[in-house]
Length: 140
Image (cartoon, rainbow, N blue to C red; front, top):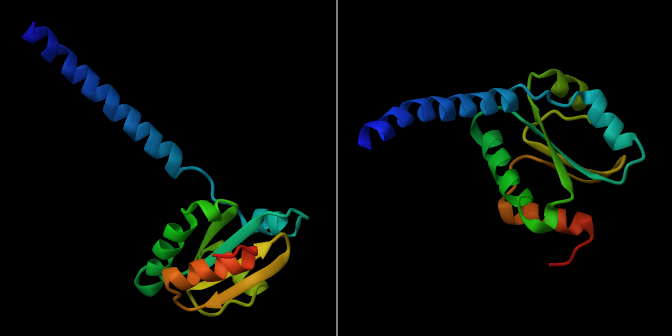
């Protein structure tokens, strides 16, 4: 009985490993939206909420990414679609120029094509939450 179980463990381990690798590859190779797709979403007459976060990897900008993700994970912000815009990327070049972004981190919240709120520099979790709620017209 033990020998039968041991003979199943190795193939099962290989299958699980292959599944994990396949899922990781699929997730990693998902295309990021282009600036054109984001702009079309923002200016295309949709009434969705978009939050653009312009950041530079590492340091305070990376901290802002983590803060923003934590805040947006809360139920009251499920309508907001987050787009991370990394400094030096094609997305940065296109969108930073269009929205006059010079510093990072910079956050810009849109509803459709209208800018509802903008913030340059690091913002605390509490202040980000309050500003987003105010911009959505939700009272705490």
